[in-house]
Length: 238
Ligand code: C5P
Image (cartoon, rainbow, N blue to C red; front, side, top):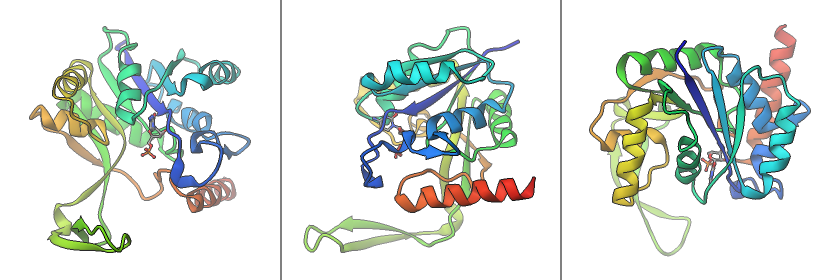
């Protein structure tokens, strides 16, 4: 059986949330969000290993909490970094080199489904790199931020909507490809807000599999309310 490792970056501060608790530790269904997400991702039985990157001071408590959960596969809690990229790089360094596919999934995207995860894994296996993404609903503008007043920006271009996809996670890659992408980023000193952008810089094609509107990334306080609403809907549908 081939090894498929899933990395969950969970070391953010979540400053946009306006709460004292980082968003990955907010309560959803009686458990910290990161654990809820871990369970949802673990619905994909193809995954053989999990690595959760969290802030250094949270490592022991999170490892202890996860040990009480039934994930059915090893979960390593590693120290995250100052950026998402650094957190993923730290976890990637701990991935067993015999691994075929590495999947990265935001710890704060609780509604990923087994079907979505399995599709991204299958595409990555066949083509090297695949992510979930959804079409843009709104018209997307490129802007130059005006210095004053701060809430105004100047539009410099309108990007045709049919050429836009909003990237989600999971994002999955052949292990060696992702290692090369992170090595190049470290050499160049470049940063990307997702893993696909680092692979794109290598010139390697990345394929997009249709994600869903429900696969939200908890970012602002209202997102937690939406997450609780989705959860109540799921319960009512059972
Ligand atoms: O909100 P944002 O897009 O920055 O966060 C996406 C994910 O990356 C979250 O799960 C967050 O915890 C994680 N992250 C991280 N290390 C950082 C910053 C963000 O693991 N230094």
